Image 1 (cartoon, each protein chain N blue to C red):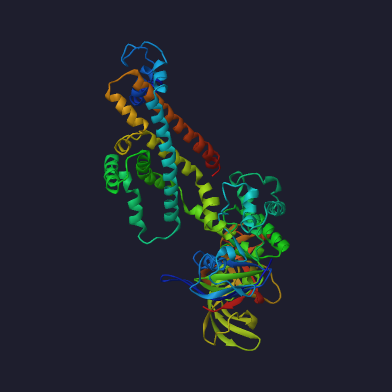
Image 2: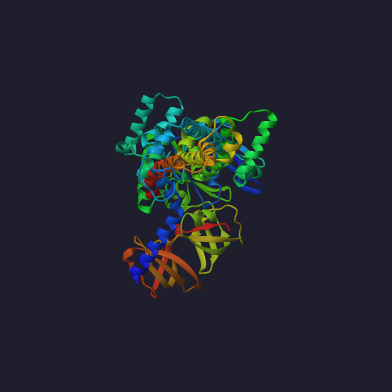
Length: 359
Length: 265
């Protein structure tokens, strides 16, 4: 019902194009893992290799410690939920869900019982006689989920499962997917390019780019302390400011920045390859800017608000610092902060929120 | 002004449909002629020529032959067309483009040439002419048609559905029989009925490749050689009626089935 997945030095080449370059990744049994990355980063290819639809050029995938090289998709302990759901249009909802168990030799009666149980779990028990075209997008998605779970896979693969739904339904289905995963305990591996979706559901986020893994870990770790510059930018808006490492001792580092010399705790440094005199990127998330004085805060001086827009939960502002007027910084302030265009404000930031990334 | 345009449009429509259907209407009308010649003035109506048609053994057996040839040859054409379409759409074949061109090529060759070629071939290999050879001829002309219709309806969306079926444990045959074929059923039925109507109306190949047992168009032709009479009109009307029934069946099955799906998506 659940299994650990290990990718061992997976390579995939399509003619001259390297789709996957030495992927090593472990996903624990029962985890909800999300492969996250821009289109063309290789995340779907990795999923299809695990499913058995595409053979890797080199390397191996272990499911529950066992290799499945040259084993077709139907003989693997995985099932795939496709982006377009791929429901059988000529069959009823119940027949769709029964299809897998029936193909695996389970009697009609048992298959029907299992289908009804699963449809109940996804809240579609009343629709078992309908055809897929009579259902809404969200309902079709649930049928696809029930159908995939009906064969009791160890690992369920979800290829951009929420891509076709509108925002509200997507957020709702995220919660449902996660709840169902917790209930059945199956390892879920989910592919998406939406970082909010990834953070909302993943036990483990795997950020991919150009066929490599950029970072992997829990949502807060990957967001707050990203391993690479790409991850920092992909997980959400961030201000990157070029700096130079001027000195380093046990507990703190000094940086030369466009707004003067900054002293930060050495935990801000997220890379161990930097030497004195090297250039790096200072990263500040927009929500880390503060208007009021706090202890341990680092003042960035006076800034002019170049523009401000209401974004619902926050106000998004573009700031220009007096110390470095040509650079625009993105900052988020609370709804009630009263920020408006042309205003001059004094801003600061927690020292512990700032990070330093390599180029 | 508006009314004038409406009248103009209606008039145009009337002329166009008159042009298309007047010959058929004349044919059907004079099949009810009381007298011995299918020419004005019309005196009737009378069903006596229909009675003559259905009491003519040669005509009724030709009608039965035609139906059998149409139904069975279309079945074979559809099966071959479906298998070819499935192969081309789902597998990467070496030299797929020229092979595909070759399978659709008969669509561009005249029936006379195909019939003539088959006649020569059958003579060479010593197969005597019969309804079987006519049927084979109709398979030759209708397979490319069935292939083209079914192939056109196979898309990448179905590819994912077939993948899902395979992923859930179905083998290649189960995927084809339980998923692909039922999914393509509307276009398979369309191909079948179209093929039936083509075979039903076909004359040249049937004429060249049949001998003692003949199909209806061939029988009608030999009837026409002895001159026009309302009996030929009556048998023509029967042929027309059956064609209409087939086309209506096609519309009913395909468009009724397709309608709700189209509306949703």
